[in-house]
Length: 367
Ligand SMILES: [Zn+2]
Ligand SMILES: [Zn+2]
Image (cartoon, rainbow, N blue to C red):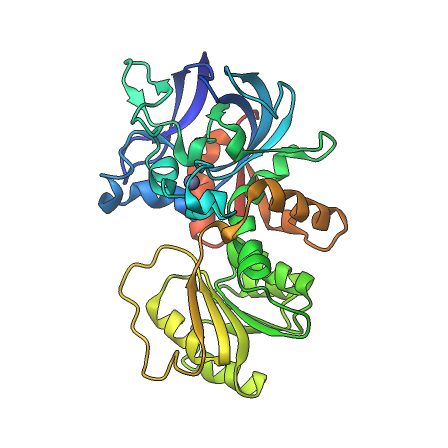
């Protein structure tokens, strides 16, 4: 069938909106009509030359899709035509990590999610010239009117929910919230600093409030994001440009925080975050780090832990419904992060995201 998709053809070029041919769902696959798709910084990874071998262009990115199941392939069970689904990352279901309830650490996470291809290297989409275009980014490629997914990365949700808002739950929001609730296990009365108040960091701030943390420090460069962090639960905000961020945190916390959560990937910020932990404190890291991490002596010796996290270590089928329930109760207002754009305005969405003007763009392929 014909679909409209935002195709990334070169790392330094705008997206091109093209009509592609998409094959119907094969064995174990489902076809989803995309209603909304969040934009995450990972969608910009294929723009970087160093990822060309793993994630070859041309490709359709987008990995926070939400939509309606239109067709199912042979052998699919547990999901039906007409179901409303939130698309998340893909995993195999049979490796040790998947069987242990940690699908984000699936043995085949990288080829399934970051190659833009199926595991056998194929893609269900071709362009007007008949050339293949990667269309399995995170098992979905949702910057398009339709996408192929699987029951493992499609979470069925109630049909009464506003589907166009739910896509970001599939990656950025679950990454921030899962890191706080499932990995760090922030507890009532505890303290945490969140470095970077983008979609992942602000989701962490909201989750820390849900968990009952009584000191929640947000650190960011954008005043507007710090203001939003305050509205979403931060008890303190710090300008990330300040030369003494760690000292400010040590002073306001009386000697260090229980938890830190870094979304910046900047080694100096991470080193400062560890410095501002109390003994036995835990620092979680997400995002792609661009350089080696160097820590001062005695950073970890006092029982401190540094842990790298993917996708909040969540099981999407279990965690996304929990986040929706929290949202329905008004305790997790992730919709406040969202700015909507028609799919044709994807370049403007990317620019606004990079400029810090919109925390979480959501592309609407149907408008
Ligand atoms: Zn697996
Ligand atoms: Zn993502």
